[in-house]
Structures are given as structure tokens and as C-alpha cells.
Image 1 (cartoon, rainbow, N blue to C red):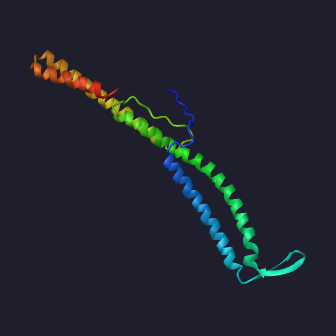
Image 2: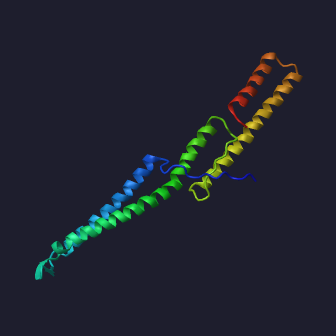
Image 3: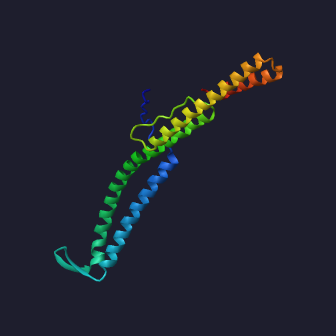
Length: 186
């Protein structure tokens, strides 16, 4: 069994637009969650009072206005830390998706140009490894079928020569063989 090639990540952004949109959407969800929790806390504490000491005096304030600066600061710090962690995690996760998509695009172009000997290799932990195996099976099947067609054309050509078929037919069969060889890498 041939050994699979090992691919190491060389770039942080493989499909830059896809990955940036993915990260941006994730961060916007985090921001929306922080704003929602702050808003709910503000609304639910609207009818309550809180006492605190400021400059050695006892101060009684509406709870919402007393805690909002601290809640905003806490949310901002948490949001920055969670966003940094989310960007790192989303980059790792998106690499497992964007990397294989990038590889498929390159390899499928090569297969589409007729290279039926091409095999698609992915890293072990990437997504779509089943799809790469299916693609490899498909190209192997196509390689066998195109090879069989080439062999049949070759047999027809030999048979035509033995039966003294018209020269035009033999030329067309030769041309068909050359076209198959030029169009496909089998």
C-alpha cells in the first residue's frame, strides 16, 4: 500500500475570505451575547436599590446604575479574552475544513485536465477524508475504464490492419489512440 503524503500547514489563512467571515460571525455572536446579558441585567435590576460606600459616606443608588460600569468593564475584558481564544479555535477548526477544500480545488483541476493518476491526500485529522478516498476511487475507476477503451481501440486497430481495412479507418483509429494518450494520463 503506498504511503500517504503528509501535508504541513504553511499558511494561517488558506481560504482567507471564508476564514475571516467565519471568525467575524463567531465574534459577532459573542458580542451579541455580551450585550444581551448586560441589557437583561440592567432591565432586571431596574426596580432595586443598592447601598455602597463612597468617600466614607453611605450612598443608595438604583442597582442598575450602580453596577453598570463594573458589568461593562467585566464584559469588555471577558469579550476580549474569549474573542482571542475564539479566533485561535476558529482558525484551527476552519483549517480542517478550508484546507481540504483548497486541496480538492487544486487536485480536481488537475484531474479535470486528464491526470487520472492523481491522488488526493489529506492530513489524518482533516475533514472530508472519506470524500478524498471516494475521489481516489473514482479516478482509479476512470483510469481503468479509459485504459480499457484505449486497449479496445488498439485491438480494433490491429484487427483493421489484419483485415486490410481502408487506410482512412486505420488513420482514424490511430488518431483516436493518440487523442486518448494526449488527453489522459493513465
